[in-house]
Image (tube, rainbow, N blue to C red):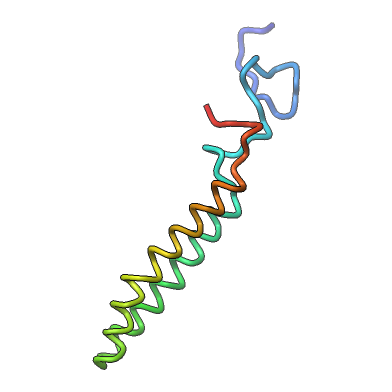
Length: 92
């Protein structure tokens, strides 16, 4: 083998015994990462809009969303990640 470094770009001969190109980072499905980012932005915009209205009902709704919707969202995405986690190709 030559002394220069080769990136294993789908060259199975260049892979080490413990390397795998098919695994996802930390075993977390990419779909769950995208959903987390998307829902986080939507919730942040919604809560900001409710607070900026200045009405007591809007502020109360924003507080309720922060208190209940965010933990429910986190729990459901954690469950989705656990069921879709790639156990065949675990992270290092």
